[in-house]
Length: 196
Image 1 (spheres, rainbow, N blue to C red):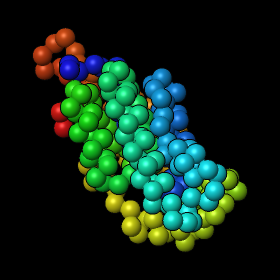
Image 2: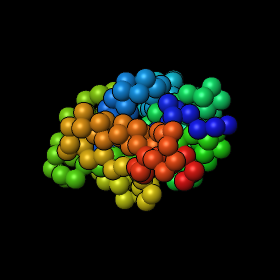
Image 3: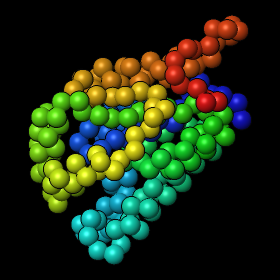
């Protein structure tokens, strides 16, 4: 399958409260691409119960990732873009990258961070009232940070301290840089690469 300049897979990952969902939704709007977030999938799988408790927790998490993988596969089969958002495991990220490359499409890895610790905690506490975060405590976030393995080869690091509109513009410019031109040697010079 040849490279389609209008198609890209973007994976947005990072610990809780780093702006993953906000950025992913904004990218989906900017690129007219569906956004597949794991949290809503896990909420359905858990039947609305607290997904952090019970014997089904690991099954729900793993099945959420499998659903995202299936949805990405369908988008690639259709020759369409996708934005995936979750706290992604390195092996799953590599699988998504390999699937996208096999389809001949560019893959973009975005790591979300929040460089201001006080603002980071305030962001978390502000969002804690939402249904999906009610059962979480700041210590849960710190545990995630300790165990989380960011993509060392990320194409872009999105700092939650920057305006979302600026982050979206930067990511979209990376996508645009990779679009092929009619002239040899004039292809984009961004980090985004279908054959990486």
